[in-house]
Length: 77
Image (tube, rainbow, N blue to C red; front, side):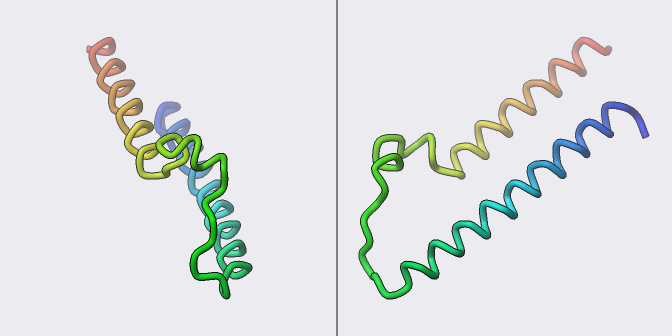
């Protein structure tokens, strides 16, 4: 296995572990709010609606990784 693939594997495992922990934390919060139908949105999320959105973060990270891969391929060839 090349060093590049090893680094990508380590980063992927790190993202998976973080995602699992974050998902478990959100699930615990949902259980605590089970009886409340219309709970308020936290202030930090209201202030940074786009930065705290995991979908936007996923797209931003994907674009950055694709740009890095394209740059690496352009330099390597």
